[in-house]
Image (cartoon, rainbow over all chains, first blue to last red; front, top):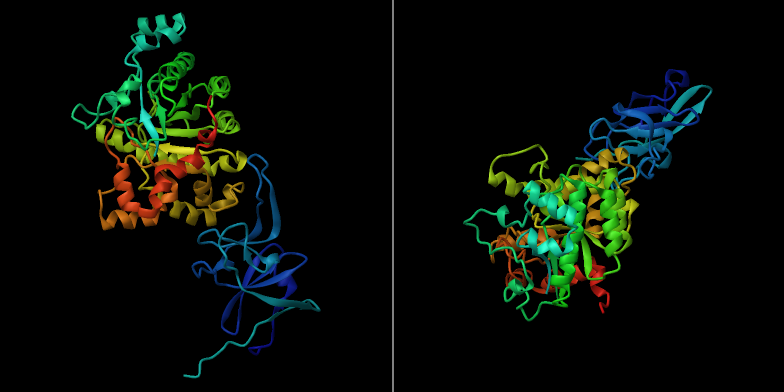
Length: 129
Length: 338
């Protein structure tokens, strides 16, 4: 595979639904999250403290609610960082969900063709020096 | 100047006799139960006058100041009797009637805190309802040391009743007998007992915010009385930081915890961890945000700063701390009292 292009990262069947699995694309660690109806590609860096965010769990989260309501939702689209528990909503551009933290995880475009998962990863900018 | 914490207490049970049911008067005398005046909360050598037992004792130190607009009385006489919730409720009624007749009726600048039986929150609600019509009561007085943190469900109706009537919930240093001075447990030195107020109050604040009381009761206002304020910047910074990762545990808290504190909570200036006039004091006050403070002399105790020192330290921000912040916190102060 070449940088700055579509990269085939594997067969869809190799990415179990509800899980996130790490692949290497052009030297970058990227998590492929199979959320069932959508596949996300996430740069494995947490915007908070640069943790390997994709080693965290893919799941849902508590929705803002009053005490006793116990309202759970956004199943399958929340990525939870293993270091500090920051949660990112992959269906909302990777924004941190329901907190004052303004960071977001970096997402790449994903396409699935004939059962193969492709990720669009821009070419890395290289300094001239 | 609005002085948000001035103590008073009946000199003895006899002073409450006209207002206390004979059953409970007999109970107290037979059981040898004493009132708690807070005079005994400070060692004999402490710089403190006796707790005022009559309005004359507030002259000249408190009411003698020409610029005093209001003085909010706190009577801690119940703080040691909460073990018997029924006696505490009867005593609360007696204390409140004593406050009305022997204090509020004698000087129109005086306002008072409603004493309640904290171990019987339902009876506390009844007492709040009974007195809510008297606009001179501006606060409900709770001891900082309680049987459970005030965010606990058992206190929700009490807090709701206070908010419903525009009464501030005053959480005051010291507490009920049997309640530990420190969240970690009981201690045996006066030093720990005294400093424990500054520590325990932090657990009360954590509890009120985390249990979502300020979301559930948008009109709830809390004043932390005689519990210090130097700990606020460190606690609020850490509270906000850890909330960012742990909020799913308390999903009803949808804003950073410090924003609720800024909207709903104030702390009195006494005791103050401030040197009279120093660069360190100024730097600290900048870190804290003086918007969180309301002035209190804490009379007769001497561990705060006087209004003149506040003016020196805060300059333009002094009027807010000396009166304006209290005026917006205690909305009942704006009521016209006949």
